[in-house]
Length: 401
Ligand code: HEM
Image (cartoon, rainbow, N blue to C red):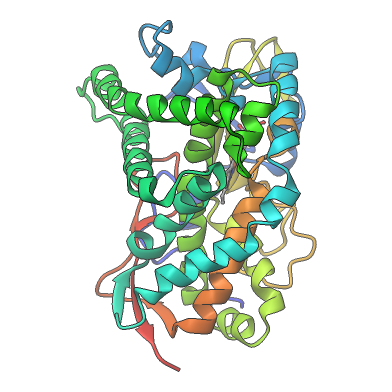
């Protein structure tokens, strides 16, 4: 377990922490985007613990999405927990937390196991496959659809919208110079107007005839129909690809760290430790954006009001002042206070679900499949987006024990 995780996988060069580099200072001004990078652990804690000074509605730093009266755009971009601040955020989070509870999530365990088994049924005869396409991508969207109560006959439709949502997100973040980002993203946004219509129809139907599902519970809470739809979409935006990345990265870490892989296979109580180390070393959400609301300081460095602050979670999780031997994959790291799920008032609401899905999936995979190894001739392809840490294609070979 001592081999440093300086990646052999050609990770995104913008994720310098994956390549063994650390900036000289934990807080630096970055001329390229005219804002601040925070890469130190204590400094990140300071920022994330103080939402009054560092707020989450960073829309003022980015070109507008155009007509903000447009309902589809509003539902997709601004009207969600991630970008809300203050009392509005607190009240909305309180409402959805009453429904999206750890118990609701824990009760999903048997169903998640069934879904993983269904996926693995399709893999047993395949010696080689793309782990992302076959396992890591379909599982989280199926789980979210299942929780919301989307009938299985509509599952493919839901997967299609999740794909479109994901593509539009990529358009938001990965515009080539000269590409008209606004036109491209607005065109993509038009594509899931039907999804909003679908969710509205189902929400109305649940108001008439409640069922045992999340959508029914959301409409029965004090949320308006728009708020229910916006939250359902947020579950897909925030919970789908992030979990896909974590699943793929867990496979990559075990592929790379053979002692750890053997230890996990021999003792399944180590699966959660492997997941936490993966979250730390290949943080699926590698950057969080905040904006300063007043003149302030971070780690003693003066930072003026109205500045964009990027908290580089991936680098923070490898700060040697906090994590001894930070580039090592260490199953015995305890405690492991990584900030892969954020910190403070916006701490990931889906963390229990992401952890559960990954644990259940890893256990079924270990039970039913051979060792999943990467192929040096066909290496993982990392996401080009700096907003995403992990692979978008992960070809694996199944080696039988
Ligand atoms: C927030 C990471 C899975 C729902 C966050 C934040 C992070 C994060 C870092 C904080 C954002 C900020 O402070 O600006 C992850 C990772 C995941 C994951 C790494 C998987 C490995 C999920 C899942 C769901 C989910 C499965 C739900 C289905 C949310 C929501 C928020 C959030 C609703 C907003 C909370 C708020 O602003 O109050 N997530 N997430 N996430 N996450 Fe996750």
